[in-house]
Amino acid sequence: MAAEDLPQGLPRVPPSRKGAVRKGAIIDAAVRLIAGGGLQAVTMRTVAAEAGLPLGTVTYYFADKDELVEAAFLRHTQVETARVVAAISRAGPSASSEQLASQLADHVVQGLTTHRAQLVVEYQFLTESTRREGLQRASAAWLQGLQAHLEAAVTALASAQPRTDARLLLAVLAGLEVDNLAVPLDAAAERAVRDTLRRLLAVLARTWAEERSAPTAAP
Image: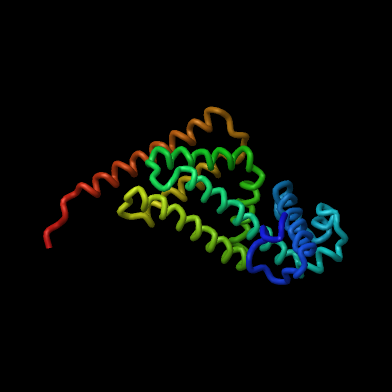
């Protein structure tokens, strides 16, 4: 991981590039452990072993497990936000609702296949955020960011209620991920994901068209 890939705003960020790379390696090791064994798999010793670093190096950069876990969550949110932004960007600024549905479906399918370990980590973090104030703040900020990107996408499609429609999309995306995360995604499940998002965006598009054509109430 390059220094510029580190989560922003972390305490104790080392000044040297070598130190930043080493700190990034520790964060990545923690994420791998969470993906394989959950948050309970993370201790300062297990992370040191996974990163191939002395225990003292890990404790130099992170005061305790909580600080390391929060850094790992911030790292994850950066990666996942970038994936959502990329999906919306691929649809293009003048995308149709069908094109947006296709790109969002690709995002979900990739999350459940190529990025499945990241998705497992994500829901570990979200569950843990019910018990940790630091993760609660990070989770709320991340979800607000995702919502803002989806609001921009549906606003471009002339949604009259972009905040509500973005919330609906975000809820459906999360539901599709949770429903399909327990077992490997097969062809039938992938078709169901794509059909669900295609139908949802088609219904929203008809709603937007009806709202645009509705007569304006007299004052």
